[in-house]
Length: 470
Image (cartoon, rainbow, N blue to C red; front, side, top):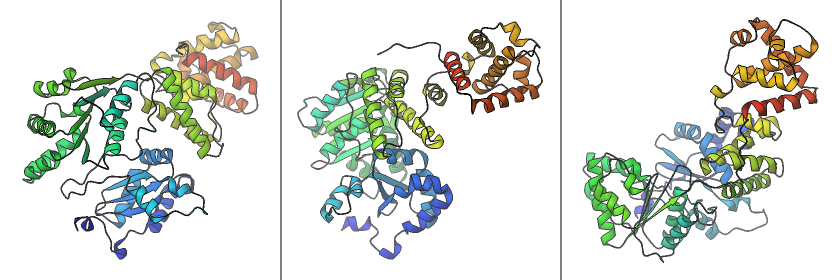
């Protein structure tokens, strides 16, 4: 009977997804709508959120990162009480038309998502698409992966399991995978430390601490993400400590993730850090080249299949991304998404030089390293002229083109204004700077040699330090 209160069963109260789609088309335009938003399928409506689905993880991640907040604002115009959207992957919708899909299969697909139905704690962090099967393993995360699998298979003898590592390393993915594996036969709670704090404060204000204690201490599997955000909250740490002990006493599994080992947590009670250290503590190292390349290769193949070979990330680009984006897996996938966006906008896959421009901030190409003096020196060396000749008033053809090229590259690779660029080139007027830039831009349309020269110069200017990691 309780579940009937959660789902809006009255058909006349249902949101009209067709109307929302029309508004989304108007709001975002035909290109974005046809490329991304048309692919969204309305699944179900609940009291304070709606469930939507798409056919691939890539589409889900793209929509979530760029459009989901705006979609929610449109939905709220039709139903103000809707405060969030759950977007999941439903590969059933990709099945051929002649393939019969039973109601049981559809129901099973929806049941892959667990929702907290308690009226006080209507929140859930479990992502049905982060599983052990799609976790890409390498030497840097193998130990954490194997330990998580043992917890999920009930073959581990350690409790708690504490996984730590930098952002975007796969910690949350492993917690999700454990939760999904165990949720069918256990009461699973997956929550972030920040959300735990929010529920704690909310329960104090509403005088519902008894429900709070009962709810969190009743879990068979308790997974808490980003524990470092609990720092300094003494009252909440006190409650968490007792929750932790209560769960251990009843034999519940506890899995924790953080950005650092327990002994390096700041402003966390020593007794809590001691409890964390009493189980198995495992770190996830930054991904090595082999793992990064494996991830890029897999994602590129997914994109190729999805876009019917319209987007083809060359092996050269894959190797380049794998070598240069080292900080996190999330950043690596984000870099690939930028390349895809460039390809869709310009209807071409960028070459290495263009890739370096697109990913300038990720590749640590600091503007401070790209100086006008560096540009002038490298252009002069390339065209075999002296800097004095370039900066002189002479108008010989063999000097004009290098000078215009240097001015064009200065505008492209620095944030200097036109008058500032003119001053750097022997106090030339800003109209001369504009003429130089336009001349190079026009010549590039038909002069492949000039395009090649500029690409070579951009590589030299932006990327002098070659990294040989393999």
